[in-house]
Length: 227
Image (cartoon, rainbow, N blue to C red):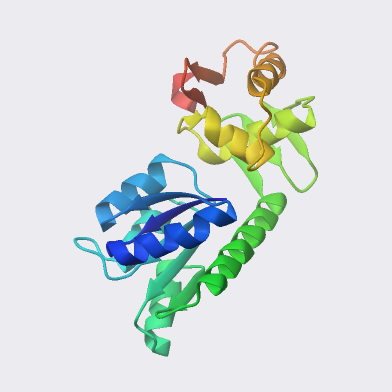
């Protein structure tokens, strides 16, 4: 699980790394609100652990910015010492998915993160994703381009779904591999083969390519104004 920690307290950061990394988590850290927004919108994460008391932009404003300005749907778990009902309601109104009051149990944090990610992935199953002339109905497992059905492999479907959720942002190879294979990607260069197959289905029958490659880095979908 890939988690972004937005926290300025070095002791708390060290505790989170010490507990979560041995459980298999991949962690990124941002130490202020502005850095948190940049990191959250510049990379794919399964969840965000967000402290409220941050230098500069506080956690509440970070949450509102991610939800309203960037339309980010990544689950957000707020950490705070504020424990009144009013504080919790304000956090949920800002866009938080869960709220954990300090001091908290690290095993409980782990359990809440896993529950948030499970719920988030279930929501994706029901979602209809659209981007330009692409449409992916996860409820029935069907994808189309300009109304024409796309005959995708199961892995191609997962890759296209990930690219559509991120679009038009570039996804690194590592991000796509994590989306498709979780924490156990294949050792071979399987992703390149699956991208080749996806491109043949997605782009070959159409005049304009949608699946773009940044050599050595990753892939993205072309925005409608690029086609």
